[in-house]
Image (cartoon, rainbow, N blue to C red; front, side):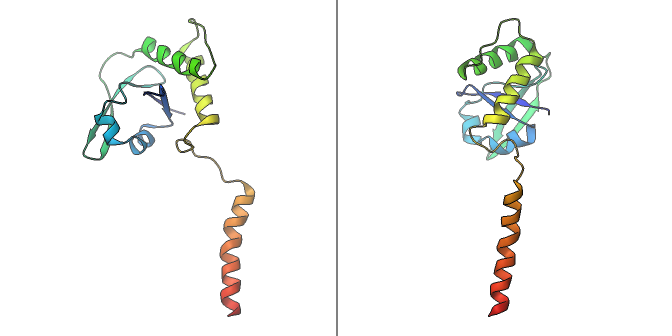
Length: 137
């Protein structure tokens, strides 16, 4: 999954794609410089700008900042009790951050979750019950 790691006061937000990040981040927060840096899993840096209410994220034409991403991921993981050594690889840190956000996304909005089988039954049962009531009138 291509992730986007956005530094914030949390200190980290993780999105499954740029499109999801653009739809989730608020322009007022972008204009307040709440999100100073953004990286992909290789350390490639991205700019985050807002024009009116539209947030746009673009690749910065510069060499990847792998050390900057590693530092951000180490700090974010340490805040949730997952302390990693200084020699942890970028792949290890990326995987740990993605796993944390997939499992414990505090907002429950960035990664889609499948509807359980019983939820599907409820979604089917409600209209069927409504039709049955309507037909009996």
